[in-house]
Amino acid sequence: MDASVRNEKMSDSEQTFLDDAVSEVLPELPAATKSILIEHLQSIGVETYDDLQFIEEADLMTALRPVQARKLLSIWKRKYQTPENSSSSSVNASPAQSLSLLSVSPRSSSSSSTSPGLDTQWDDNFEIPWTKFPDDLMHALERGKRPGPTLRRQMVRIVVTEMVRKCPHVGKKHSTEVAKKMVAKYPKSLQDVIEGDIVGPGYHSLVKQLQNRIENVRRTSTPKIRKRKCQTDDSDLTNEVTLEERAAMQDTYGCIKWNVKFLPSKETQESQQEKIDNLKIMFQNSDANQEEVKSLMKSTFYTQRQHVNQGKSIKYLREEWPFWFDELGMSVHFKELTGIDLKETFIRNLDLKGKRLLNYMTTVCVNKSKKFFQTYARLLRIRGQQSGCSDDFKDMVLLLLSYFDEKEESMFFYVEDTCLPEEVQLEQVPLTPAVIVCGQSCYSSTRYMLSLDRNLINTNISSFISALCLMFGSYYCFNIHYPSELASTLEFLQRCFFSINPEKGTKVENKNSKRRLTVNPRVITLIQELSDHEWREG
Image (cartoon, rainbow, N blue to C red):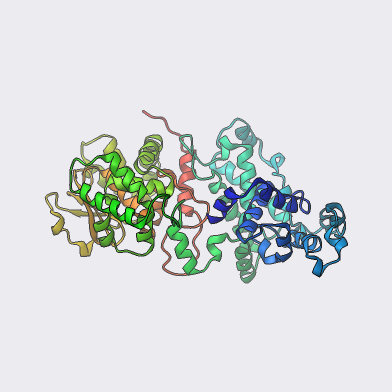
């Protein structure tokens, strides 16, 4: 994030010199790769041409392959080293003269060997084998229809066969580039879309299928030790950082302003404290001006983040920031933190995708799993004759938990409908954000509470949707990781209903050193199945 801020502040001339320095050596480098490389060079302090002489190969490996990195270094060392280390002729060499110093051109180096494993740019030039696809598949693609599961599997097999011919050790980044090309060519047929809304970048499910097929091919031809090495070569950033760094990544996951470094202009510590005191006073008044509350919460966002990131307890935060734990205050903080309107985004996506998801659950999933069918039957009995959008939404959430085989009690804690806040047995409530349901079921309840770290932070929530949004928002506002027992349900809600789709990292707690994928495979599968699900609204 710091690098992107620096990039925005750079003058046009500063951006141009790095672009020129890279392009004159690697003219065929894809624009996306070049952008990543330039951003990284800026982040490590490259500001002038002279700085390029101090670059090392390791500095370039985040964006380039080894041969590409060595080509850049070979030219930059000759062209930009200082007079003390080089003759003036080499310093003043033109780009054309500098390029001629390379003994082998990129073209000749790739053509000098027929081994596909030595083609370091194979995925950039890889052509999708469209002509090898079955006629039925091409017919569906060209008409913008989604191919059925059988045709899609055939397509993946054919593509992976060609990929492995080009390079025996295909990694995730290669699969991602190939999937991008395929989705870009036929977006209507291959993109991850639910009711017209693109989920994430739109190609995660195809990447997953390509990777699964590649792993199947490897199992039959690659020894175990070698296979593990191949898997780690192209692992993304999440898999390469230490456990300590990964914890920080989980905290910042999905956020655009997690750590605000400076007070707003014209603000001081004293003015911030004055506003905090005003908010406390206003919280005591039932007729507090909502617009004023929003303005004060927004202008004190800096101090709110400081308190959370310093590790202040939930009890302390509740006393200092009472509005933060209400819908009004949390919506302001969540919008500043993630750039997303908490409840508005959820309701919009619920209207757009909720009926399709519920239809899929009640017409397809019930026939796939006996346990899921039993859960659905139990919910029908509890719900009785009640109907309505709100109850349909409750069905959806409870069925999602069952679909992912995750426990309802990890998210909801049931008490009597007349239960007072002081009567809730908090020692039995999960430590993570939990909705306290005042009643025998979510269907009959008209009042909810919210617990955080076994502290009741809101004791009078009137609707199920509001309770769920407050619970979800708490994970981001207060640096809480998704518990592993709710990992799939929360990530599905995050991606499909709250529109938070980071391409790297994870929000799931890591109880051990086991590698976690950027996107939960079970979530990808459900997204793909929903995209393919045919239904009509009655």
